[in-house]
Image (cartoon, rainbow, N blue to C red; front, side, top):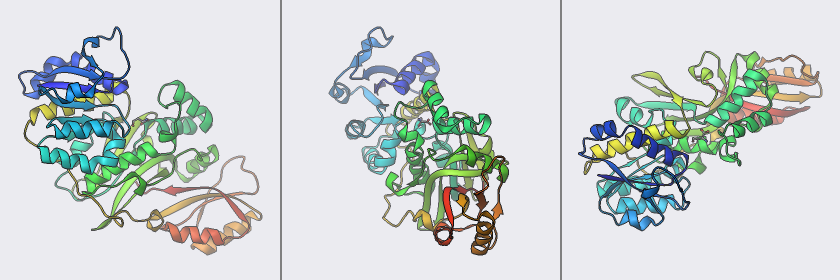
Length: 412
Ligand code: HSE
C-alpha cells in the first residue's frame, strides 16, 4: 500500500521523518506486506531534502494513482485542504489529518463521504497533538455516557499563562517569548483569541455527544485581556487562570460549548498542566473523571498521532472505523449566557466598601479577594453560581463601579 503526504510544513515533514525512522515496525504494525511513502505534494521546492525525489506539484498525480490508498493531509486551513480531502475520499482513498479547522468545519460532510466510500477519515492529531484522545473517547470510553469534556487545548496560550503565573511576566512579554520559541505564529490571533481551542472543542463535543458542533456556535474568549492583577486575585482565591475549552451535556437534546479563561482550583489536575502541555478531562458516568496529558503541539508529537492513524487506515482497508456523528440543528448548542457559572469580578469603585455591600445585597453573598499593592479604589470578589445572564444583569445594576475584568470559575 502507498501513502502520499500533502503539505510539507512542520507536521507533514515530521510525518515523513517518523515514517522513515520507524519504518520496519510501522509496516509490521500495519499488517500490510509493505507500506511506502510515494509522493509529497507541496508548492514549495525542497532541494536537498532526503525525500526530494518524492515531491510533486499537482494533486492530480496523487488522485489518479490507484496505488495510493492513504492521503495524509497536513496542509491546514480550509482551502485547498477540503477540496483535496473530498476528492481523495471520493476516489476511494482514506485520508488522515491533523487539520482541526477542517474537521471542525466540514467533519460531518467528510465523514459521511468516507462512510459512503467505505474508507476512513481519521484525525487523532487534530486535538491534543500527540495525546491519545480521539480513540480513548470513541473506543475505550464507549460504554460511558459522557457528561462533560474540558481541557487546556492550546499549548501557546498555556505557555503564556504559565509565564504570567510563575514568573509575573506580562502578557506581551510572554507572547513575544512564545514567538521567539516558535510556539506562537507571527500572527498569534488563532491561539491567543481562542479560535484554535474552539475548533478542538467542536471535535471533542462531536465525539462525546454525537452531533456536529460548528466553530461559530462555540462562545470563544481568548487570553489577551487577562492581566497580572487577575493572576494575583486567582492566587488569593486558591487557583490559577487557564484557557479552558469545554462542552457539557445540558439535557438529552442540548449541550453547552465554550472557550474562555477560567479560574481553576489549584487541586484540579488541570491546574498543574503547565508550559506548552495540554490536559483534557473527560467525565463519564461509569469512569468518573479521566485526564489525558502530554504534548499538545509540535512537529514530532503531532506526527506520532498522524502516523498511528496511517497504520490504522492500513489495517482497516475496506473496513470502516466507527467514527461518525450526526448533523445538528440551530438550537443544539445553548446560549452561553444560559450556562450556570460563578464569576470573578475586578472593578474600580467610587466607594469600595459600599460597592462590596451592594454586591453582597445583589448576590446574597460574595467572596472578596485581596492582592498586595492594590489601589484603594480596586475591589475584587467572586459571585455564587447562577446562570451567567442573571449574574450579568445584577452587575449591570450595580452603581458606582467600573468592571475591569470578569473571569468564569470552573468546578474541576
Ligand atoms: N498552535 C497550537 C497550540 C498548535 O499552540 O496548541 C496545535 O493546534
